[in-house]
Image (cartoon, helix red, strand yellow):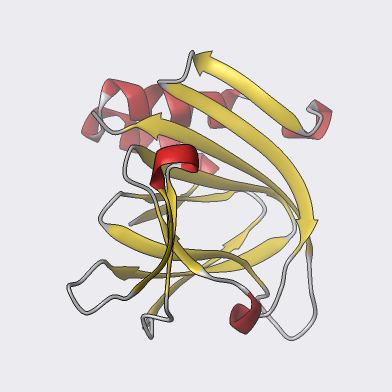
Length: 155
C-alpha cells in the first residue's frame, strides 16, 4: 500500500508504471468539486474512475475485500475515512467470491493491524495482494465522503 497527498503526486510519478501515472495525473488535474457521481473511462477498461459519495460506516459493518485484475487508487475528495488493510496470507478465509462478475472477493476479518486515515486530498494505492476494508469511520461519527476510486488494470 502506498499512501500520500495530492501534493506528493508529482514526486511519485517517476516511480510507478505508465498506467498508474495516468491514474495519478487524473487525480492531480481534476477538480472533483465539479464532477458528478458516476464513472469516467480514462483508457477504456484499462483505467477508469468511479466517483461516489456516501457516509462512512463502523469497521465492523464493512467487509475486507480484494481484487485480482485491478489496482485501486482511492482518493478522498471530501470528508475523511479510514481504510484498514492487510497482506493476503494463506490464513485469510474467503467468504464470498465475485471475481468472475465484479473482480472482488470478500474475506473474514483478517485482524488487520494497519490503517490509512485519509482526509480530503489524500490517496492510497492498494494492490491485488492486499486485503482492504474501505469506507470506515475515522472517529465514532460517520463522515460524508466524496471518493474517487481509479481502477488500474494490473497487467
